[in-house]
Image (spheres, rainbow, N blue to C red):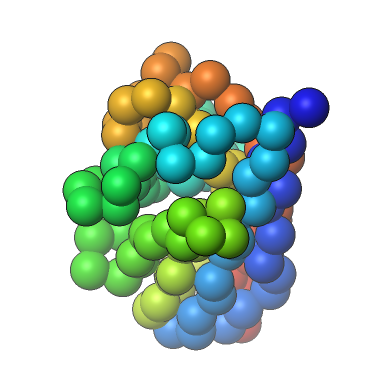
Length: 122
């Protein structure tokens, strides 16, 4: 059974940091690229970041570039999203997804995890 378990969300003050994790199982982790998406209330889901299967290529949305860092540990079948300098506009449900292409376009994702809530507020 394919599973993507995202966790690490929570409430943080503006300027703070959080690290999201996505633990994968049920498929060959090393063969897949991963991406993080987010969806804020009343807004469309948007791609945040993606990473290639080997980890050598990473991509970021302009809104998070320089603040967020995506990484993966193939030995632990886990993908991470380190989020620094968080802003209220980063508040959303964050989802991890896996596909064969390192992209932030959701149509190319084969597997999705459940979301984890990130709230940035003072």
